[in-house]
Image (tube, rainbow, N blue to C red; front, side, top):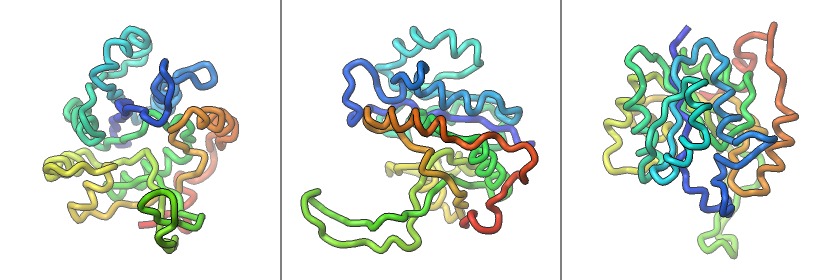
Length: 246
């Protein structure tokens, strides 16, 4: 069983959430902060040995004041976010313990993660060194430079929407950050790709939404009720034949 560290990215600015009291990752969903829903997906796993939550410098004091007891009881470490997402994840990566085999990065604003999807992506990453959840693009895709008129229709064949968790061997992720330079990738898989490493695509779900606007909270509440129940006698990776894309 690999030893896993989880980095929960909660340092975003939530510019589109438009709430004067909460950022999206700290908003209340079914009576609990969104980030706590996300964190609890990992805390009951025997293979998760470390969980690090990354918050922005301006949120840190308030976060500790509100959730310090949760951090202590759950044994969660805290890291300070940077200017960009990759800076925040890199700060957390520096706190990952030496004995860790795999690093799992997950958006704190994705509270609707099912155990089965998490099992799948970890199983594949354990074999290949790099795997992410993703869904196939099924809608017609339009490109517009001004957001008002269509410039072109983009073929949707071979297009996938990246999700989290994204799981990598610790050594590979450290190498990817060392080679990042001044670039600002939008996810960790992009950095790993630039090393020439193949990143496996594992079937995710539209239910695994990233909360972006306040209206997403109601949808997330519905998604939580619709999540698949934990598997007990199903194979570890049921999508190995038809839903695993490499």
